[in-house]
Amino acid sequence: MWGKKRKQMTTRIDTLIGQHTEVTGDVKFAGGLHVDGTIKGNVYAENDGHSVLSLSEQGTVEGEVNVPYVKVNGVVIGDVHGSEHVELQSKARVTGNVYYNLIEMAIGAEVNGKLVHFPASDEFPVALSHGEPVEVD
Image (cartoon, rainbow, N blue to C red; front, side):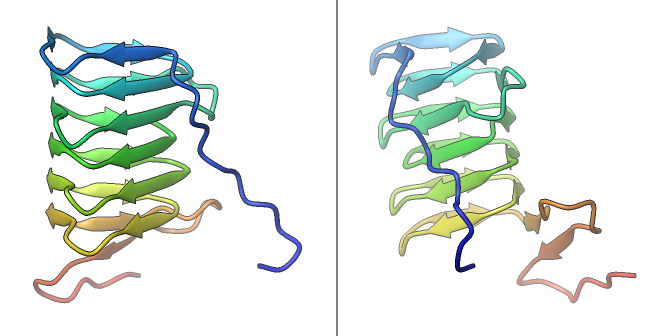
């Protein structure tokens, strides 16, 4: 990894969903989205490759997340697709599969589903599970 420059998650927040706010329906955004409230629907980022979802300890998403950079410290009930980077902080609770290119998990983070690695190239994805062994052709 020497000499390779890794993309960093931006801390810029363009959109904020407050702690006492509930959004029903899909949310499509570009830039940075910080969620302290609840989203009952899917969360999608514009296809720019730089968008960031930051879900605080008070935040909840009940739906699929499809964002290049995902930082979770709250609850997600649905699959998480992080094409660039997924960070699961200590209070993160995910009920669903996590699809990632690069993942960071803090002690205490919980995933009730599979961790599926999607490499940057077009290689076949690899599923990590604590259940039965997974065969990859």
